Amino acid sequence: MKIRSLLLLLTVSFLMSSCVSSSKHLQKGDYDSAIDKAVKTLMKKPDKTAEIEVLVKAFNLANNQDNEQIKQLKLTGQPDIFDQVVVLYQHLQYRQEKVERLPDNILKKVGFQHVDYSNAIVESKNKAAEFLNAHATSLMANGNKPDARQAYYEFLKVKEYFPNYDQIDRKINAAAQRGTNNIIFYIKNDSRTMLPQDFESELLKISLKQLNQQWLNFDTWEDENIQYDYSIYLTLRNIQTSPDLVKEVNYKEELKVEDGFDYVLDGHGNVMKDTLGNDIKVPRTKIIVCYITETQMNKSATVGGTLDFYDNRTGQMVRTFPVSSEFAFHYRFATANGDFMALKKETRQIVELRPVPFPTDLQIIFDTNEDLKSKTKNMIADNRKMLEN
Image 1 (tube, rainbow, N blue to C red):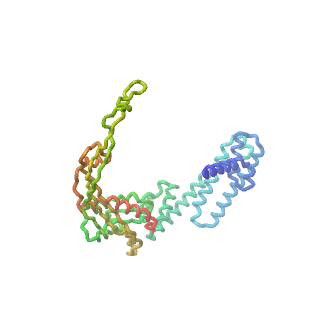
Image 2: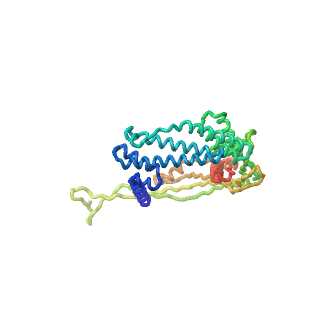
Image 3: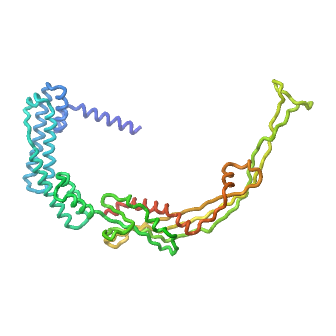
């Protein structure tokens, strides 16, 4: 209901805004909306004098406003103003292109004169790119992450202006690398329990690369060419396995089945007939029974520890979280004596199973691996923000 009401409100708002006249936009100082409205109207009704008047006023006022802002920016003498100047010149050019779509007879009536902004735009882009490149280069010289990230965005802006600017791709890549925090993931066994073979290598298949994002890179194997900003240790502190538990349960299952039929006799011992002259019979039933001995096998393993986040630049642990995983082995098989027809479908399936050996302690510890990987990965993902600093 709320969504429907919101859609209705948005629709009404859109219709109301589309119904606002060009003169109303002009009065509010929304010159570009007034131009859009006037151009749209004149495309359909080229003889509307009122729209021509609105167009002339709005076009001149909007251009004067942008030109005055360009003038004021240039008067500051600051080298960082040309990014804004480019935008203002592009506004002027785009506004002119909108008006130029009108027929020549209307352009003549409004006294339209084409202005070539291309040189001004190119000159401003050159100055903007020159400043941004120099400023970003000086930021890179500071050698810290925040400045490298700012330099990255400024180099990108240079590339936006001039895709083939001097070594711009190399500079962008260098800024991205310097601005990125590198995180290395380790596994540490402090449990005093021997781990299964390949347990650690399987854990290291945790696919942390899927957590990479802007300014964060995760590794599970050290790269000697990388200086790591953070280390994350999965420290295993407690590993336990339960004993092999075996329990026998005895029960029976019964089922009522048909076992022939009996004739219905009258008071004189004669077989009764139905309306068609057929003997009346009633089914005879009996209870069949099957006795089951079910063997239940249970064993479990628990692996617990902490996920510790270290800032390598200060040598301090910044956060620690408990983490644990459990794997349970459950198995049932059974023997049956009696009439197998009495067995339920599920019981029949259990009876068809054969005994299996219990997993060893090392096997069941290894089976905690997938759950431990999933919980560890989710915990790191939930705390990525902390690693951006």
